[in-house]
Length: 342
Ligand SMILES: Nc1nc2c(c(=O)[nH]1)N[C@H]1C(S)=C(S)[C@@H](COP(=O)(O)O)O[C@H]1N2
Ligand SMILES: [Mo]
Image (cartoon, rainbow, N blue to C red; front, side, top):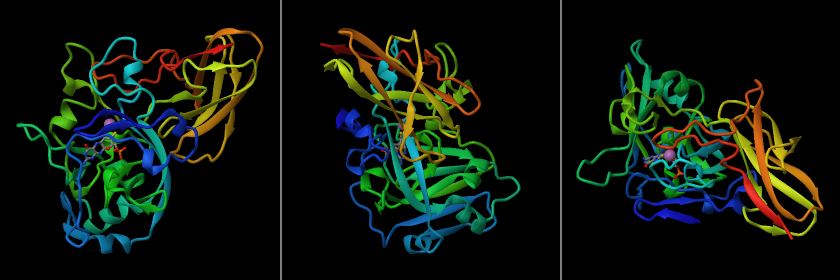
């Protein structure tokens, strides 16, 4: 993996490992605000659910396992993925394209637990708190909340990743997955869920994970929610030298809660476009892999691009909308790659 920072651990998936529909657990990207949890005792672990509810309570791991098991494919992406490709620099971890991965997760629907604790009329948001302890004197805890509607319709509490117990680095024993939404909404090492009458207020809600411009108060920016509509090329690699003949261009495409319905590929820097062919599974919240078979005779530099279109006809933008923290870089040009036919 490509390590961006060692403490906290932030590392991206190598491009070769993004070519299959399932990303192997061993190379799934890491994104942390705090020190990694090194051990969790399942017998001592419990999940507290409280706040604006009629029946606050605690759930042991055994109790969680007694709820009907749900299985769901979901592509998880860090909102900063692609940041280092932006033409104007933005602050944050320098992700290229590997701050994303797809897995089949097993767990329990959050709505099942919420039904037990019964949110009150006043309930609007659901806050998540993990076991990780923050760095620094400010001791800012990574606590974030999502709207009650998202929590009730499409949020999984996952304890399995690709049929294995959730790996420690990815949130063992239980993590939230707001399906189709960026990683910041997917709290790892869950220990407390608080139902709130408004969005949680705190550093990780108000100062970051918002889209804002220079001179603008971060708090007035939009909160990052679903993944941007995006596609990118995973084969060949940028700068690769290839022989003339048949070249299989591989890539992926996703759009959070949107459905990707087409991906177009250009091999001439965006002058002409041809539809790619989808390959592999097609699941609601998971990426769609695609291929484009390119026959090339002309030697020299070729600029390859991919562009996703969703079921409502929205197109991936040629250039992403820049923001101070560089979130959601889905620009076609920013993701273009050059290869050499020698
Ligand atoms: N408790 C906790 N949960 C967290 C984080 C964290 O630092 N602490 N980081 C979030 C962010 S920003 C992302 S992108 C995802 C990354 O999940 P992964 O490390 O399993 O890939 O976890 C999210 N959940
Ligand atoms: Mo993230």
